[in-house]
Image (cartoon, rainbow, N blue to C red; front, side):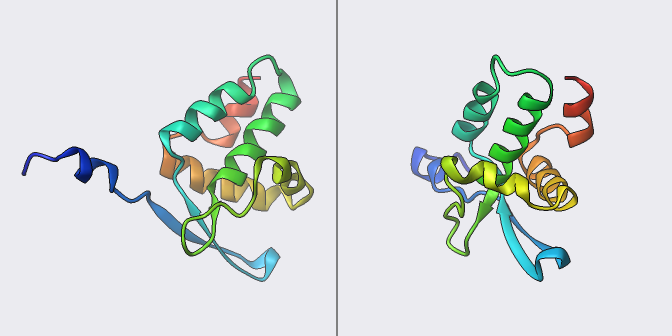
Length: 114
């Protein structure tokens, strides 16, 4: 293996995956979270407890991970709670794919620790 330069490191792509969502009638693309987004996610639910913490964690994770074909986020921070009006099964499915790509805990673990 060769020694990587700063430029080599900074140009590394984020992992993506397409997820078939029959309930929505199509496919969406999700990507792993950046280190910056993981830090934002960690601090976003500080002070929140129980269901409020889970709501923030799930909606923010999914809104950060849903992207278009160019890798741009589909939802901004103000729109993230609108996702929670979608099917719980779909949101859990998307969260679990994003969590796997990003090295986060599974949904069940988040709920059980609150």
